[in-house]
Length: 117
Image (cartoon, helix red, strand yellow):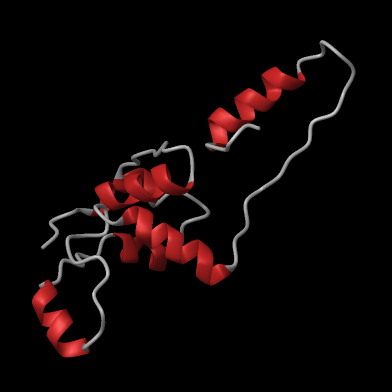
């Protein structure tokens, strides 16, 4: 049974889908953000720790991440992408010789965790 907290889950998702960077904002500052409504703020503070066996027995479904979301994040992300039809991004950088196309491409790939071909 998993004992992951919200911070660990957010970091795993950020690492799997983005560049892995997260920013921890104190509760007091979060209330001042214009993009975060009171409802969203309240949702972030809810303790969602649930006993896995109760959910598994009551809902009768195939449990894919029984050991925890963080431990199975790669499988969860794969399913997320497949069900939403998310396709790999393809970028072509054009320009004359020696203007920094390769440098820009490398930096973009590093920042967004993309494959550079």
